[in-house]
Length: 270
Image 1 (spheres, rainbow, N blue to C red):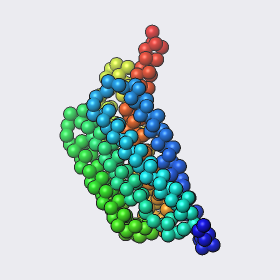
Image 2 (cartoon, one colour; image 1 turned 60 degrees about the horizontal axis):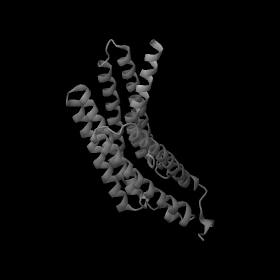
Image 3 (cartoon, one colour; image 1 turned 90 degrees about the vertical axis):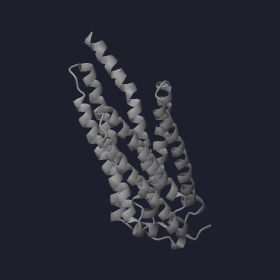
Image 4 (cartoon, helix red, strand yellow; image 1 turned 180 degrees about the horizontal axis):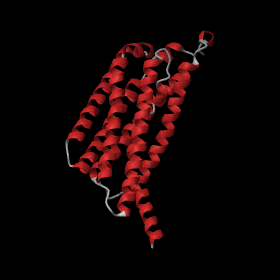
């Protein structure tokens, strides 16, 4: 059994955010599983692209959950009370920045494609794709660099530039996507109330999902830069990829709710 006499009084600043991050991660994984079930049940004849994208997302997120849970068991099980083990990066270098940046980039590029479908112009989609690619590259680089350093205490002091580009680029891309979708969807309004209802619902879902993801990315970056001697940033960081995966499925599954809203309006107008 590990010697707990050397455990410092600030241990909660190290273990608490880890615990919350893993709890959030598992909770959002459950939401993602339900979203995937609804998607495949409701849209069996959907296009191949979104169906493949959803399959890839659920596979990557399952792997991410397994790897992060392995680290959770190491921190709170086999390595409990061992500060050196708590400071070790473990597999989080791969499950958080590497897999997280991949999921984020896939989601953002998918929205770039949707912007192109709406606008029939390449300017904004290319900009979104470029920013998303940059944040993905820096996320991969940050993960590899964290693996090389090996301990969180060194990562927080030496990888702040990489992390700033990764999370800052992520938030910027989300804001561009949200603003662009609102603009192009608003231009698609017609004189038909049914169509306007659909567009209003899509705008609301886009704003809700995009701004929530951007807010958590900014929160993660703020915690990382402001408090470099504890693990506050890991509370949002561990589950960040789940937010993007769920936001993608929420937008795809919104078509179920939207069609139901239109049908109710039609019944009430008769």
